[in-house]
Length: 209
Ligand code: HMH
Image 1 (tube, rainbow, N blue to C red):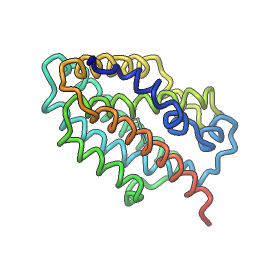
Image 2 (tube, protein in one colour):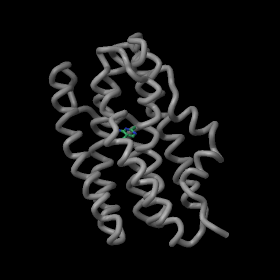
Image 3 (cartoon, rainbow, N blue to C red):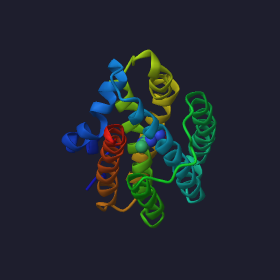
């Protein structure tokens, strides 16, 4: 049996993927009606997430085959730069970044930490899926209300789309050379669920008194 390409996972789970990449939060980014508190909550929590993602990607790099090292190193450098970018925007908007992880952010981190024990191919599928989710989510919010445009532009930039496409190719190659299990599909579905939960978390924070 041939291993499924990452694109097959998208095709097989359109409903889960749809709700992972579409949310009233993103509609609010597009039309400017997003409650400021929701945006500020997202900014602080996504900063924590990106820090956790950087650590995950470093662990993934440590066990990557030679052919994927350049791609993962490039991604790591981009994540480190992204933390600086978050710090600049948070500073401008007076958002404190030294917040505790929300339970949803903590659950995402626990999943990323646990991926260390999953096959390399499945962990790479997870990385591709979570980056692809952001590409699609923010594309759906484009061009975005002026207040949020730098954020929309960050994850709709051609360079980011290229990175996501390269991750997809790498994941496809890893799947071909891995033993066929269900781990890749499980990883994909877990990412879809966690992405959905992340938008819901930020949105709920906006509704909080
Ligand atoms: C929750 N998913 C979440 N945050 C991000 N910054 C990305 C994916 C893309 O890096």
